[in-house]
Image 1 (cartoon, helix red, strand yellow):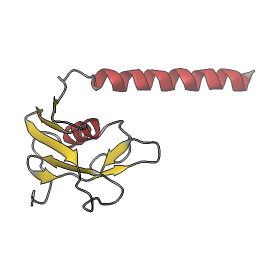
Image 2 (cartoon, helix red, strand yellow):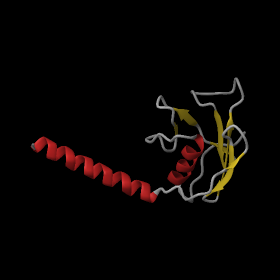
Image 3 (tube, helix red, strand yellow):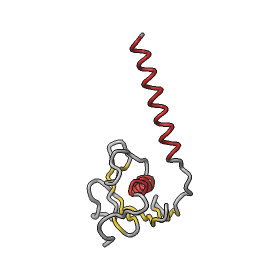
Image 4 (cartoon, helix red, strand yellow):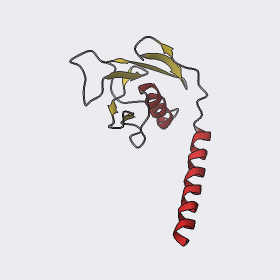
Length: 119
């Protein structure tokens, strides 16, 4: 019985933590301009996000997307669960490249930029 009570308590705390996280990260932003095949081009939190499928032969590390934030490359990686993660926020899997890119921008914050160039 004690194990059951502990399990219920852990589940309740986990559910509360998940609800708090979702309340801080609502889907309040309008959808991106869809430029075809899931590609996107939008301004998010003052940053210019652009993503498109990588050209055949230019794919790297399992990622089939070319993503930039303010013209600087953001590398995404495809996970076994079908989601995506970025090198900025690599602890969480996101269902689409756009959401992974938005969360990377959230993690960067307002004053920081990605390194490198869009070239």
